[in-house]
Image 1 (cartoon, rainbow, N blue to C red):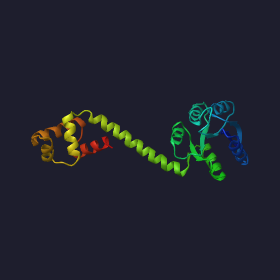
Image 2: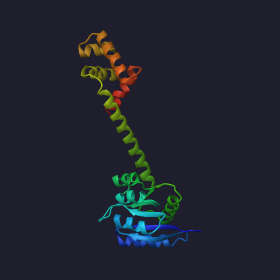
Image 3: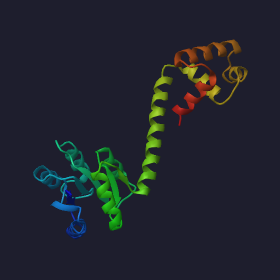
Image 4: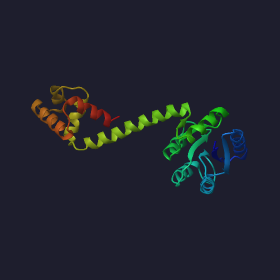
Length: 217
């Protein structure tokens, strides 16, 4: 059986040596290269065919995020398994967005590391549980932010007066309530509400209120 070819990238020599020793202790995998920073990792992968790169992300002389993106752009890109001591910071998401297939903490036990190497080599993803939860949260946050952006853009179609009317409608006011609040006739409020719905291409005032809420999340 062909061994999984691994490149180990870490600026700390002791950490790198420990990882190399661990990987080489398995009969189904072997270390084919080592690097102390991102640019070295890319050069190594260009000369050594590899299946998996164990990548540190915070390294002087070239971080692992840029290197991950460059490695994934190669003609025969290796899978990137990011190892770090930090589980909930922007490096996590930057690495995954750059194309990393997996993410593990450096204090992960050896068996889990071996399982992760095999998993990403087979084309599967591998995320530490804490990272998975945080990633879901971040994705949700981004979805809300994106929804909010779209809503804000749509509301820019409204005049200042229409925006005031919608604000009141979104607070659950009736046409009569809006009329009293803004010193308008009820008929004028109805006209404003109709125009708002037409401009925003909505069916009813509940949809308008939801859109307003999204914009002001």
